[in-house]
Amino acid sequence: MDSWRNRAFNKVLFRIMRQRLANCTSTLEMRDLILSIDNYGPFISAPKGMDVVPTKLAKIPCDWVDMPSSSGNKIILYFHGGGFCFHSPRIHNAFLARLAGLTKSRGLMVNYRLAPEHPYPAAPDDSFAVYRALLVKGYQPHQIFLAGDSAGGNLALTTMLRLREAKLPQPAGAIMLSPVSDMAVTGESAFKKCKDDPFFDLSTLLLMRNNYIGMRNPCEPDISPFYADLRDLPPSFITVGTEELLMDDGIRLAERMGEAGNDVTIHIAKGVPHVYPLFYQLSESREALKLMASFVNDKFKQAKSMDKKAS
Image (cartoon, rainbow, N blue to C red):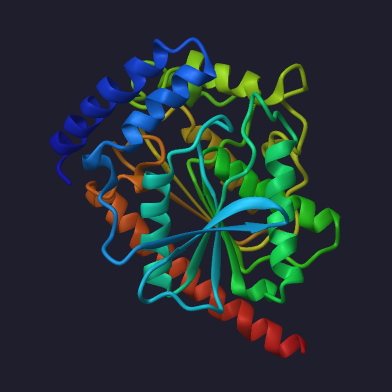
């Protein structure tokens, strides 16, 4: 996409998202706003053939998100973004459906409990519980891939860290879109991009953070995985846009994961906003989907091969 197209999209996003979020003084106001945007047709563009069926795992509400090409033996376990405070199901389901279709997988959206009614550790507890429930149901780790955007990227990583500590098998890999990794907000981009980010400003980010963690230390590893011991994690793909406050959350996380000896891929897209792969009208989103699908397919094959050798 030409740079002028990116700028035009960012201006629209700034007007309908950032400016309106900045005027919200409570989580309820933010939820009402996100609901209205979730019903805004140009942002959704749901793929043809998408099928969404509610279910429960470990008593936690989830949605099966399938496409005609979906297979029952591979699952993308998805943790949605929304600052741990809200959910935009139509936008998130559309993205998950596309990724599931390209990887011939079933998507499973986790509708974890939200803050401030259910602050930390409700969200990571629910995420971990759903993964364990899949294992109990007989799904093999090499058949499961974790994915999440923003707050959901945080949950994908904390789930893997909890699995390692519990000595439970890891999934085939993980995808994290603009992950929230540092609740202490020490990345330079949080300040350098504070006027440019078309999605939200720093005060909105801090409001959502405080709803989630309250008075807890933002540097706790289970809250901010950037500060965790990042050894022995599955292959991971991280992508960020250059116009977002959380750019450094993803870049620095990828650096730390690589230094810890993990297989990690970082993709930085120029001129695009926070969680840009959700916006299918962007050519960068479509390109990122292809990259992620290729990554998922490769790691599914590798994990299956390693599982056969181990048995």
